[in-house]
Image (tube, rainbow, N blue to C red):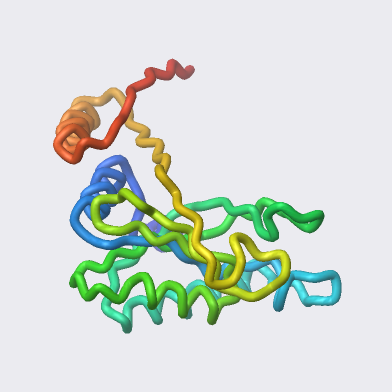
Length: 196
């Protein structure tokens, strides 16, 4: 295992991590942002594509910006429709940061918008404390960006899949998460999946 340790991310999102993110949403302003982008500029045919290495470097710079601003950030996997609603629409899988205003500064929304603009993102997601009234905010002025520069579209839910095993310790964590979800009044359901 020691030889493989360098291959593992510093922070893995596991089943207890999902409950921690839900707890942060209940107690602090949160949001999501990435620096991943398929191409420079407005992602037109003449724009140069970003390589995976380019996007990873951009995301490291974004992470450093978030840290310098005093925010907590957790890396998660995400997907987004870049250039939504246009012939250039493309689903992109990207590494996203779930950002928490852990110090409750009240500046997270504005800072995410500024960073979204800096890293040419179509939008950022802002989740106010408690999770209700989440908004997708446009952060670039490209003609095909969604929802459009400076525009906001309300999101009335965030969907999270919390996967767990059936081991003794996983059941304990599941019981704790269900208790938290009930106390926070988050609707949830449990679906059992059989696997081989």
